[in-house]
Image (tube, rainbow, N blue to C red; front, side, top):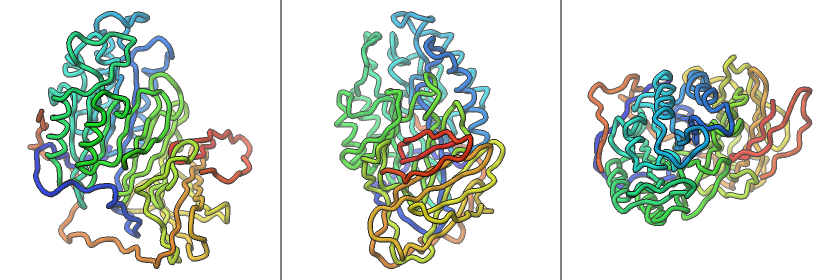
Length: 444
């Protein structure tokens, strides 16, 4: 696992950066990535593979992808004694969950686990605070932390969407609401890192469906947070509203597919890739150019996708690609044209680089397709926007004394403040898994 310095102390400064800082540049080095999983539902009786898939995600997948962070957006446990949801919290499920996370080395510096409504059934959050990784570390149901990288800070803030008033709300009520005290804590956490280049927000539910969710949204807008990740709906998708892109990851504990979600930030532009607990390899995400049309039907326009200048004769393509057996080849093509070979970046393992001539492309949307070969092969695609502009992709200057941070600060403390893809013929043995929040077409 990649280990970076974790900032968990309050800081002050100007208003936080926002997604409009996203750039399309020649610089391949300002990139980091992390994994989102959700709805592990340990130990439910409906699926039967939730333990195995959670162990896979936090074990083999983390070992291969080496994320900077892992985010679990709730329903950590199922709250059942095998069939009954109406009883008290099941301590056996919580111990099972904590045993899996501890065995995988998921400490509070690299693992951000949030509460879901199942974690609050018959409880006011006490079990989450006692047994979850972040709950035990922070004493809060709304943990937050920041990554300090050589080129800037990135803040991860959370909202506790399950209702936690007393008496606790029982199953089967959806149990989603913010309290005024929780909203005040969220604002304080946002205020603590106003010098972040980006703020990425997470919760269990889509906040738009929560009581006082509009107030939560306004806090995100006020502090420049334009991306929000959640689970709960046991499906994958993307929504946009008020300038906030809302990405939902499928359930890891109650289904086989679209439930290991890979986020990447490349020059402050955010991208997503999705793979499957049933067959995770190879996994990849296109980080430049950024997908301009999102959702399983490409209906969500990405307001934060930097365009490709049409005047560039060597416009960069960057892909993060991972495989348990190693990635042997990455190819790309524009609009179904000739396949071009990408090369691995020697300074950033798992990053593949290429270029294309944008001068012959019309202004508007074009399809970038990537083929990744490893244990099997899969295709990923993004709909990229080309604009009529001269080629100016120089990266911003980096301070000469900037050095990569290679270890956790020994005195760090926990902050306890309250488009449609062109048809392609399948190769023998190829089974398409169409869709994907980033317009991905998966095959393997």
